[in-house]
Picture 1 (cartoon, rainbow, N blue to C red):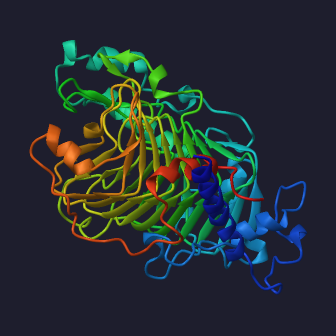
Picture 2: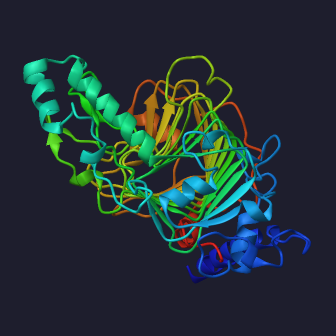
Length: 463
């Protein structure tokens, strides 16, 4: 075991050191010598490592985001387009100045986040409440009274109160959804946290987001959907990070969490959990060429949706995503759930179990998921047969994966065979493609928890 740990340590050191070489650049670069010219609102110059981190592009061959032109983010930013921000207003200003139009601002830019930024913060520093954002015609009490299935029936809510709820959601969207434009790099300085907001990458190619903690993108106005499932469900709109209609996006070394507002603490209304959170990282609406690497997803219900509709149309041939060296710690479902895309899931560590666990990887309509050399630590009551779920797909490739079951010994597992032994209809073990875009060594599954547990998440990159 000591030898195994030593091998893992040497590999992880090599992996963590590799990006540093990629950060090197000529001294003639506009920010190579004068850190004092790089910032707004900062009390001290950025360190050389932080400046280099902002200039780093995705390494060649590192997943689907390396396809086509590759992903460089804001690495070409001029000195006047490098910002350090510590408030919502400063973040919006650095991304272009107007949240309503920032999604179209394609000027190369590097934005460093310092400290905690709250999406509910006004320009004068006041924190808004859900009541502040509510339309005058909406209240939760009135909504619950009007649409109680015992009164309203199993019919989708409609009428003035539902219209007021929708207007309330529009108010919150304007406040807490922060829009990111093309050719942007956003990097968290040590301890940086984005709370109560959605970072939206929509129609914005070539974006890099690194070293941030995303916390509690709560929906103040969830919708009751009485026909969602046998008993109905509450559904929310806001993700922590959303990628839509965009290509060449790299999401790296971030932490996603609900913080002190977990799903498990929400009340029951109409006999169903009042769901105030949606996804952690959702990739939808024809997005493609995305790499998510070395991220940490902590204790959430819905984590990652790749493709949001079963409708055969513009998503076909899109939604190509690579997930590597991520830690899925305590998630209940969508790790990820996939439609249509060729999705490469390798060298990820899963810690699964607890009340409410549903599945890890969802095999959706026309999906082609390749699952290789991942490690699944299973809590009590979770079996290898529970790790896949058929959402209308037909095939998935799985190879080199291991499970560490509760009360058992770690062992290799054929995920498709385990699923097929317990479910009908069977899934085919061949998704029809072999990934070719990978950077660095692919670890044997037994080493994955050591490497990923040590290096995944925010505040692990050198600064």
